[in-house]
Image 1 (tube, rainbow, N blue to C red):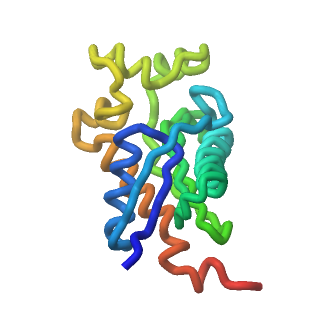
Image 2: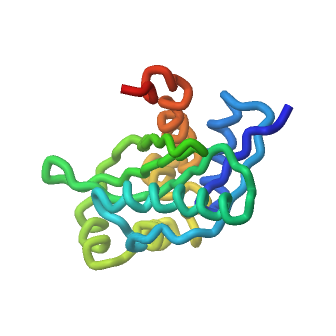
Length: 183
C-alpha cells in the first residue's frame, strides 16, 4: 500500500510531530516531511494575518511538491498568532490543510488570554516566543513547551495543542461528502 505523503511548511519538530500524531489516526501508512518555507507574514502575526501565514505555508509546500515531483497528498501550514476579541488579546494557532485537488480547510487551537504586560511587548514588535524564552529562563521554547506549556505549568504543551488543532483541520477531509460536495 502506498503511504499517504504529507508535507509541512516548517522544519519545527513540534509542528512535524503534531501532524504525524494527528494524521496517523486516520492514514496508514504515512510519510511526513517538513520543508523550510517563508510564511509571508510578520514574525509575530496578528488577527487575520495568522490565517494568511498558515495558508501561505501550505501553498508553498504544495508548490515545492509540484516543482520537485514529490507527489504529496496533503500540505500543512501552521502559524501562531495573536487575536484581539472582546477587548482582550489571545494567543492561538491556525492550521491550514490543502490537498492535491486544491481542497482546503482551516482549524485552530483553543484561545488563551495573554497578560497585558506581554501584549505591550507584542505590540512593540517582540515575538511571543522571545518573551516566553525570557520568562521561562530558557531558549527556543517554541520547539519545546511554548507559551501554552509555560502558562499552564506543563499541563498543555505545544504538541498537545497543535495535535488537536491539526485533527480539527482534518475534519472536512474525513467528511468530504459533507464539506466538498459540488453545489
